[in-house]
Length: 581
Image (cartoon, rainbow, N blue to C red; front, top):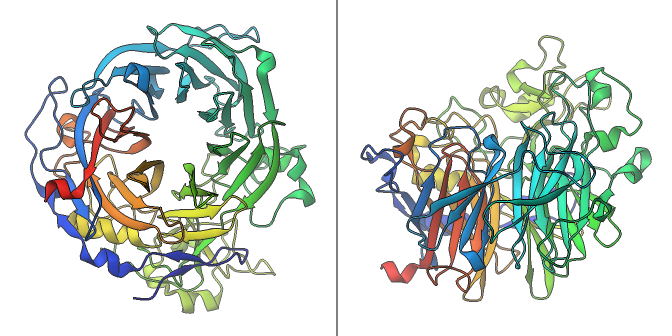
């Protein structure tokens, strides 16, 4: 079968997608309709029959091994998860409680809670105190046990904090420093010398305030202790204002569009750093700008943003997708329709001496009370919205597109009279890039096709409730989190699908052809999580971390997944597929 191509918005080289014929030979277990036994939160077990789908000749498989449950539904009680090898501890962000839950993972079949690391009330080196009502967003840990937590202020437009702790300790914080507004993600460089924080800086709901997005670069102490405030440097986007902004970076939707002010730095206010990866040399960070559909390149020694580049769009005339939540499974192409990739998580790895970047192309919108870019195709030409151009109506096939959510901020023709291109949200796959932004490959429509075969009765379902086809109009399966690990000399990406759930595994050893390996979903679709959370399994995977076999308590590689909707943290065993034949 021919390869599907995906061209970026600015004419970058065409990426390659693995041939779909490889996916046609899936071995599928339709476990989604099996009933789970009622379980209480205290003694809840893993789902009896998780969904499993593998490619023919799959090299590895995922087995749910053990889970820890908070019993909290849809309040972000288990978001980001990190692993501290020396203590065999999992560190899990409980955003709702502004804490990091520390779990004993020495018995991976039964992770148990040790204590909470509380962040509120911690004194900061700038003289402030982490306020009650603050929100923990991300956690990272260094090899020697120095841990850091990114903490958002109660008023998200205020500056947040980076809280330090000892991962081998008993939960006592070591101190804090002040960073930018809404620190959403933190990572530690491979050499352990710096923490890098993506300060997302979302606007207030009414757009009365929209702080500048920034990246904090924090020099870390040699020992397990807090850093001083002087160790914090800030990389901003001032150099990219006006004519300095590269083509393809989306900057609509700021206070000017909302009618609430004229910013001195409008580009800097609109850019919202989301997720960070650092190269193996610990010199350069790559930061996703999800809503802006781009990546920022940061020189860590100077704490300066040196480049911005667009991740481009998916041409839906070439790459099929399901555009409606009222048409069943209908994965097909549409002319004059593109979707912004808008990655959330980003990871980096080396192949044949080169560094590659992998993005989970979830999609996101600017959708606030003060300004929203979201409209449905069927609403164009109504209530003051510009219509679609005649050529778009004829070429796109409006019948199947009326429900699709698109942006009103992009796609108008040169006269501004009508929309000549319809731009939706989310690439619905993963993409591989070079470090200078050249698209190497994508997975195209594979995630939707794989999940439609694995759980046909719950294709493109939401995470909170089990339904059929209720997310096709709005970013589909939403690949959000990812982690990368090396097993027996091969490089694998583990991708969490936020809505339908589960973990996809792709072999990225050859960056030009990402190859589907296996998919496991620890979810019972016959159960609604809101009514029987303990039996539903994992809902809304958010953060994933790979645990190498040398660090693993079981002696085999594992993947830990934090699920924000079900409030569960689940460990998956990674084994050779041949072990189960």
